[in-house]
Length: 399
Image (cartoon, rainbow, N blue to C red; front, side, top):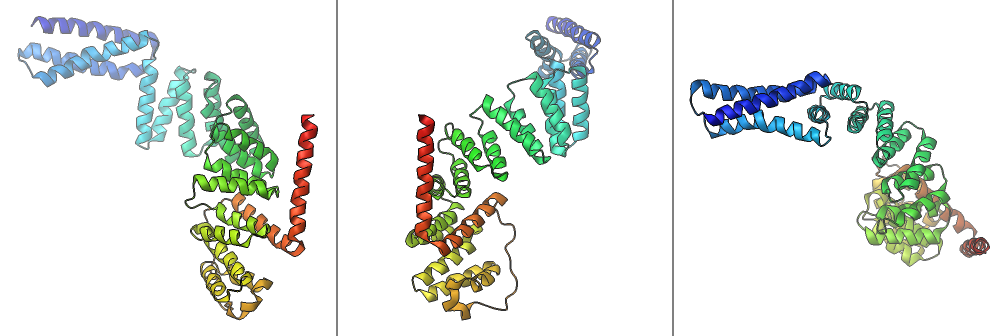
């Protein structure tokens, strides 16, 4: 009985303290814990009135609700934690999990209205808007989160990504440049900035971004692959080859760069090496028909007409546009009669390649066909002259 008396005195005291917080802060968030505490006190009173022990489980629940919970609130607030904010945030996350974003937003708006400096409130509200597609509202909330926490680099990145989605790419680039200046090891920012610069055909600056990112991500497949793309678009095929090959050593599985390596090898008149790379390209869905087509061309160069027909048929079966392409390609003259004329138009759908990847592939193919009509030796001399010019520029800069 003494235990019950002590329990009730303690629980009533804690109840009064929590209730005073509601009055003092005018914050209804404390209503839930005070209701739970009231339930615990009520159970204790029932035991006294009945004069009966209701069991260990009931006793534990009583202590948790009437003593542990209010004590935890008092201790947390003593150490600077805002329990009201925690309650709002927890409730909002629960409603988000239940797909009730409307109720979640209402709670979060109430939270930041009561506590405008709630960093987590602004950030969670921004994430909620973002999921709904309210990109401008999300940006506003991310900005407020950054104003409260200057080291919230993730929100910097989120704003840049949302600006890109809104078509404000110049603003996104500026934001990403600022972020990388502050935090140069933020890989996602470097990746997005490099992508945006490549889309604007600012390949030299993109190379600088990717090269700097390599300092902090030495074995990153995507960086090496993207460097290969950027150097390809600058017609620096030696460096492009170097980075494509490095990417292949890191991740050879389903690697789209093999096809580009094959074309570069053709540019340098290395037929055997090109054949090796196109054979690897056959294993990749995105480059299988193109690789088949190029292997058919190589087989004709080597005098293997039957094998060439097999590869061309395979390419056309996946994408009928290769039949027309072969008819316009003089190298296929020896097997023109084997190229189908009346075929059902079949084009590939859902090619898992970005526009930048497809444009780079086309750039390589166009360069190869153009250079093939000029002179491979002239092409090599052109590369040597360009490299000499780069080295001279570096020497002048160093001096």
